[in-house]
Image (cartoon, rainbow, N blue to C red):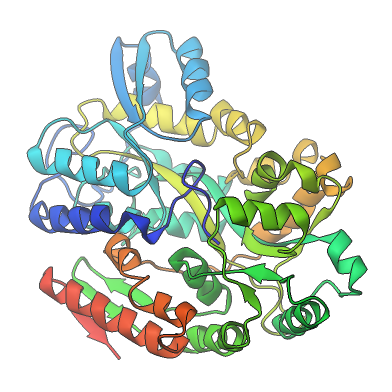
Length: 460
């Protein structure tokens, strides 16, 4: 399930035109030369990081940083940073969410002017900017030392080809959000495995054909997160040009075997996420659960107030009983642009925003934390929201974060791939193709596009 466009991530296929424009721009600017902290050209780590003292000194110089970000917490983080470092002015610009921002960002990179010093970039889009040389290597800026403050899986998302190209801002470990009132009414057991989940879906819909365990009309972010949790590795990139696409791997097949019968059996409510009808279904109980990112707790509280006291959180169902394995769904990083003339100050801001006081501000205001320190803190773990019946849901979600499988990769043109999802995999949800056929079409069209853009594609 993708997160709403107003929130942490917007991996929706609605931005098809933007995805096409971004991909074309990426191909056009692939020869651009990033600059290092010292101003010299560099597209990889120099092996020598600047010192913390150098960054501290830069934060005491009159400087203006431009930050492109859409997260609502950014305003308060900027205010706190400027209060601590009054000589640094941060110009916060909301250049749009997700693909809207990415198209503007890549156009600015291509033009050689107008790019910000820092940009919020979702994990799935990060490889496209990293492999085109548009982002500074943060290891050169001394931020590689922060690795221990984040989980291995989320660090994987910002370490592209051995270059640290962003710092994690927020994450979305997958979990099961379910309506306890509905589960009790129909004597449903909270599913520990996907086999039990499928059984619950059939039992609920048989008891009341107007009610469903879940709603799904097809979403690329949800599909890739499910494949990830099943141990799949359909995408791999070696260097900047060699790409492997295999949407028939074992993890993908696990998802197909689970989800195809749910689609064919009419066991999923055909309501689009984040629509008025979807919120109504979550409010009146006709949609009884969500398998989605940990950020969903805040969205339920604000978007489904009538559900207060009904909802609970459980671990994501297991593919193999007794083996916990989850994935991420959503989340963003913050990156320094290679073209920035203020890299040291920008690095200082990133450290404040994502590992310092800014990380706590972000968590306090509803973002799901990427910081291991916050995830382990009793002040966060022991919160018992009344909305969730007093359940300490963060304890479940923190465990989910630690159970995310490492080693996942996105395509270096994932924005484009997601834009064609409705016309490929999406056809399975309208009865025009099987899920397996849709995934094969998605692979073929993604591979064809990658070849056209100069990548060397291996596609099974």
